[in-house]
Image (tube, rainbow, N blue to C red):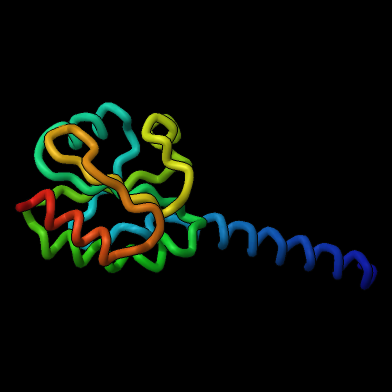
Amino acid sequence: MELKTILILTAIYIAVRIFLKTRNSSAPIMAHGKVTEIDNAVIFKALTSSGPVVVDFFATWCGPCKAVAPVVGKLSEQYNNVRFIQVDVDKLQSVAKELSVNAMPTFVVFKDGKEVDRVVGGDMKKLETQIKAITA
């Protein structure tokens, strides 16, 4: 084989390996603590219909979402009486659209099926204040 052919085949091999590695690396990296990832609109409606619920709308490609995920996990362990749900906006676009979620992360706070507040961005202090408000 010519050197040129060997180099081309090597480049293709490396490109394919890199593609497969990055493709598999977007697996469930977000879930922490007692947070449940939901990918079904019917289940979403059922889980947000009663009690205090915090919904974390995220994307696997979102840097700030990855940064706050461990903090959300800790909040889910600290506030046992609150249900914590994550929704990947790329997997459940219908729910994100219905709730007008346009930025990630967005945290929507529900109580007994009704949205009571939301935090757009990674302001965890504000989110915890809202969690305290729905559990009071």
